[in-house]
Length: 353
Image 1 (cartoon, rainbow, N blue to C red):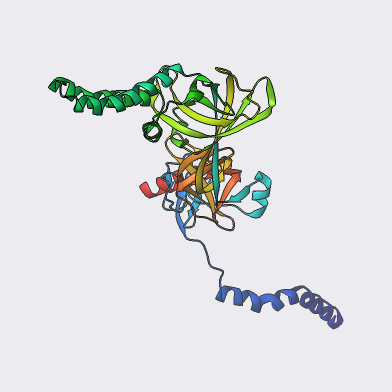
Image 2 (image 1 turned 60 degrees about the horizontal axis):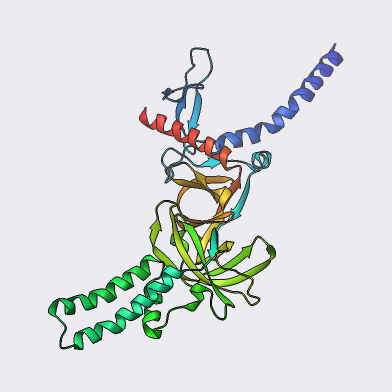
């Protein structure tokens, strides 16, 4: 009998010994509990606007979802919140980032145009030169009436305005006044290794075009050839029927292949200087604003409103809202935006309650 009791006692010790061994560590865990997230409120599992300050169940018996203090943190973009995503989920949704950086920005502007044969502008240049010489003579003539004296300066100003309406700018007009010679290249006379080409540039692109920008011209009959030149003048007057502006360029034509009024394709390389740029796919255009998601810290993505400049190929120039070196999301940002808006709505509903 005593032997049987000893066997039972040893068996019991064998079973409870592991629990006795871990008891001290459990006690230590209770003495130093892991930090707990603070619950702000509880939200309805199906309806965002319904919240509760205490745990509750909905009409289907489902538990309300706790919203913690680190969820829905405020950002500079109204209605959106920062989003935290672990590495596994980032890989699953194909999330990818790129770095905002300063670089030289050149915007290609394409337009249709013609090789100039501009008799009207040539005649206007002659009128301007004649007006310049006629005005002093009229003022010196003793038989000139007072009315003629008043008209003499106006004739020069009128001829100048006509030149500008035909596509010249102030600098080009000053050059005509200095040389007192009309430009024979407008009539395709003489040495035509340098030729005038006119481009019709849409009003949306005209702010980026300026004197000196590089120009490349191609023709349908010889697509393998490229004629290079530069912008000389940008007209101040719009063609409202076509919503374009005339851009005059001088191009090199050593073999004199460009013929008067020949249609051409023109590419203007607008030099925008150095600027901050991001890939175009990083930008979410809402219609009212432009938003990017930046990686504020590993695994945490924050929406940021940015001010855009020109779109340059597959990139956007960023005027404000980003700094060089910040990482922006280029793939997976639509999913981030959905999550960000959901958290923003939840946070707003919780604050309202």
